[in-house]
Each structure stands twice: as structure tokens, then as C-alpha cells.
Image (cartoon, rainbow, N blue to C red; front, top):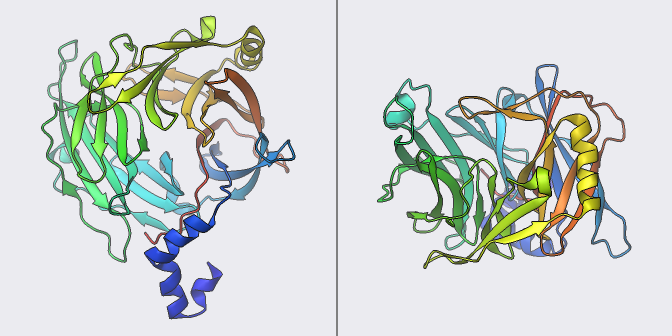
Length: 380
């Protein structure tokens, strides 16, 4: 970043797409980082941690050490919805900002002024932002799905109204939102999903209590509804993960009682064909390790994606579900931060600590918002 101030030619070169792509190729050894969101005295703190190794070949993570404070004044009042390739999305209702964790550049996304749903004063209005990468055109895009119930009455027959908008990131002038027409049934995203192989996936209600897997093609900008496996029925305990380079569903409905997790892997997206359900069961010693930490602290685990090595990230949180469906994080005073990493293929679970050398962050609310191993030089 210091080299950008040498001269205009240097600055133009460093900001060019050629140099950005070259930088990614030159970074042959990715350095994983974990990003944490803390609540301290009515102020949000954004921290970054690098990891240490416990083996000579440098392949096993033993702990993370907090080494960067990424907090900026503009993020106060916002929450982090996603970390993707060095980019973070801050959201506050229908407002959103994109933050580059490497260049420390922050841009405020324009308001979707033409959205009829956003302009409505509806208490069950839902606005979800997701960042994705169009590999065909080497472009980063923000996808916004706006939805609300089609009528105020609930019940099993509830349906939705939805709009879909796309914004192109990068360049000196922020582009405008473009509305994407969709032949798919209107739907309401349940939780944040993931982007893999040029496609964005997320779970969504298509009518209570039915949910489906939604796929967004980052290149063609086409939206399609994929049928989920029939036996994956519990949406509250189902998460989208990447498994062996493919999209998969992980259901944890029996995890706390029996240490079981059910896994379905998408074998063929075009034919909407899933693998048979595979059940993985934690060993008694592994369950004892989990219960020792969670039961004593009255906490549960949330899935926050997978690492580059394919390990599922399980984050301990004290969370309750409100009647509105919103997840509420309960206060918990602690300076002890950690996650569990679970290798589904090897059925191996391990605890990874997040250490603070100064032990200065006594917090009531904390969350691991994501793992990332990309430094992104793109100009927002």
C-alpha cells in the first residue's frame, strides 16, 4: 500500500486488474485468518487473527493469535454478514457497506431506490446481501435479495414476494443496481450461503414451512430453485457447506443428543441429483470434549463454513431463537475464544483456541464471522 504513493504510474499499476491477478498467483502459500466480531461497551470491535503451527511441516493449526484490529468508525451500528475473498459485507437493515480487509477501503453501497419492497413499511421485510465472483468475466458482484410475506397472515400456506438485484464492484464509480427477473417462485432467504465454482447457493423459504436450495449463476445472473433431499426436512439445523469441491447440506438435528450429523452432497446440479444421506457420528471422547465446553457455559454450536482443508467450522455461541425467527445472542462475559474444526471425511474433531496476548478483550458478545485466506488488492 505504501508503494501506491510513489507515483501515479505505480498507483495505476498496483490498482490494475493485471497486477491484482498476478498478486493472487504469486501468493502460493495462503495464510488463513479468522475474523472476530466483539461487542464491548456498546461498541463493536473487528479483530483479525493469524494462526500458528504445531508441526514442522506447517499444515496443522494449533491456535490463532489476535494480531490486527480492523475496527473503523463507519462500521458502528452495522453487523458483518459475510467474509468472501478478503471482502466483508457490513449490513444494517437495508443499508450495506463493503470493506476490503487488505486495503482498508470501505464503500457504502447505494440505496436500491427502485425497490418497492424496501420502500414499504413492513415489519417482516427481509434484505440479504451476498458477495460473489464471476469467474467468466473476473468480476465481483453483490447480490441483494429483498423479500416479505405476500400477506400478513402466517400459517402453513404463507407465500412470499421477492426482488433480486445485482451490483458490480470495482472501478472509480460505483455502478447502479440492476433488477434481475426470475422465473422461479418468489422466496425468502433463511441464512447466508456460499459461493462455489461460479455459483451462489443459499437456503430459502418458498412457502412456510417448505424450504429449498437456491442457485444464482454469477455469470449469466440466472436464478434457479433446486429441490433439496426429501429427508433433509429441518431447516433450523441445516447449513450449506463445501464438501470436496461440491455444495452439500449438513444437518445437525441429533448432534447434541447422539453426536450425529447427516450429510448430503450434490452429485449433479443439472439433474438435481443428491447422494444418499451419510451419517457421521462423533466418538464418545469427542462428544465429551464438546459437552465439557458447551454444557458448562450453556452454549451451542453454529456452522460458519469450511476451511480450505475441508474442515467444518463450528463456533460456540449462546443463542436463542425469538418468536420472529430472529437469532439473539445472549450475553456471556469471557476472554476465552475458541472454535471446533471438524473433518467429516476423517471423523476428526479438534479445538482451536483464539488467543489474545494482552488479554484485554473481556466481552459479553463475540462471534467468529469467518475464515479467509485471501488478500485482495482490488479497488472498490
